[in-house]
Image (cartoon, rainbow over the protein chains, first blue to last red):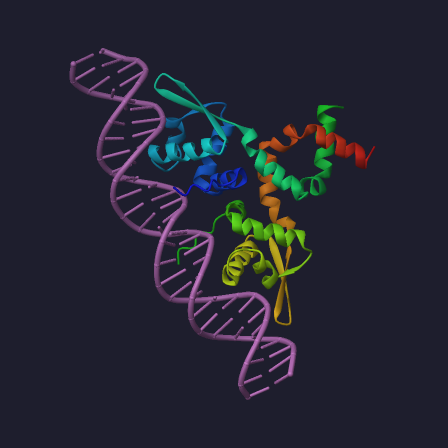
Length: 111
Length: 111
DNA sequence: GTGTTAGATTAGTGCATGCTAATGAATTAG
DNA sequence: CTAATTCATTAGCATGCACTAATCTAACAC
C-alpha cells in the first residue's frame, strides 16, 4: 500500500475544486441542516454521486453529519476552511487588499 | 469544439489543488522573478512538466511572464487569487475566525 | 409480515490529468 | 557556420476522478 497521505491543504483544495462538489458545500452552508435527498433534488446528478461528494467533503473536514431516523442531515464545518485561510494569510492577500472592509466590519461589531 | 469554459473560481482552485503546481506558484511568489530552469532545479520533475504547470498557472491568472533573450522569467500575480478571496469572503470564515488578529493589525497600522 | 424510502457503497466507464521522453523553435557562444 | 542552452509543445501512458446504475442496509408505514 502506497498511501502517501496528502496534506490538509491539498485535501481541502481538491474537495472544493470540483464545481459540483463545491455547489454541494455551498448549499449545505446556506442551509442550517440539509438531508441528502434534498441536496440531490436540484443537483443534476444522482443520489449516489451526492453521497460520494459528501464523503469527500467530510474527509476534508468541511461538513459534519447527524443521523436521525433514516435521514442523515449535513451541516457545514467552516473550520475546515482553516487550511485555505492560513495559506492565503501567508500570501498576505487579505490584509493588503481588504482594508476598508475590515475596518467597517470591526466598527460594526465593536463600535 | 465543446469549450464550456469553467468559471474563474474553478480555474484557480484547480490550478492550486495540485501539490507540485502549488509548490511552483509558491516558489514564483517568493522570488521576485525566476526562470524556468531555476524552477525546474529543485522541483523533482522535468522541465517540460514545469512549463506545463506554468501554463496552467498563467491561464488561471496567477503568474505572469517576461521573456528576455532565451530565458523566460516568471513572477506572481496575486490578483489572480481574487476569486478565492471573494469566495471565502462570501462565507465569512475569515473575519469570524481571525478576529483578534484583524483587530491587532488595524491597531498597528492605524492606532 | 410486505412494501417503501433514505442513504451508503460498489463495479464499471469515459474522460481529465500529471508525467516523461522526445522534439521543435529561438537565442547565445565559439 | 556549428554547438549548446532555454523554454514550449507534443505524443503516449498510467493514474485519478466524476458519474451512473445497481445493489445493500436500515428505518419507517401498512
